[in-house]
Length: 260
Image (tube, rainbow, N blue to C red):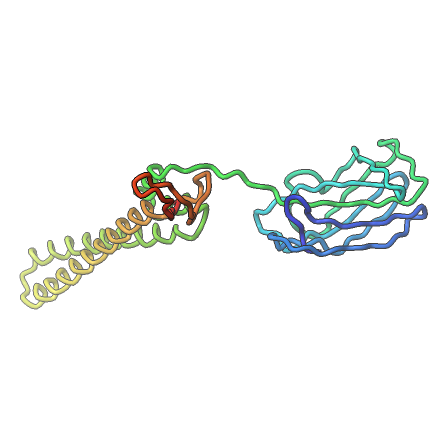
């Protein structure tokens, strides 16, 4: 069943009779999270109610708050206190989830049918504000890192691989060119000198190209960091439409604003 967010999270209704059998009913609602509860089952063992379920299609880092509500057939609400297992905060997705309710410890006597509701609400991960100056400093050291912080993730670290790879390649070609140039100076053979001269020229050219490539990646990362929208900034973002009163013409004027 598809999860419900916030006010109406994932809900599975189990109707349990006195003899431990029941009917499973589910409902589907539109949701932002693709997470689903599947394969719900329950058993009554001694004085404990054991509920099993699978929480599928949850994100790798997505966590849920799992709660349980119990009500009698007459509509009386029971608040389970002795719940253990995959319940409470920080429950991740996966198969074989289990909740155990110790009915005896809660001093609850079942003498009529009850319904058990299991709710799963996606946890809101707090967003830590990143100042643009801090992001620029990070990108100056590791190209792409500041953009990653501003965008709250993303594969921008690839820019760092390009930068350090080009910089390392430029240094290696430059070092090789210096060694071959020294050999060129020490050589007495005209053919060898011509060959070394060609090699040194090529290596210097490759070194310069890679150096300029590294510089372009670094500058591009810095510019991108300075103009990229800051998704960690609190408040409303995006395009907004409003109006302001102009006392000179004595009429309201339409305003358009874009917040980064």
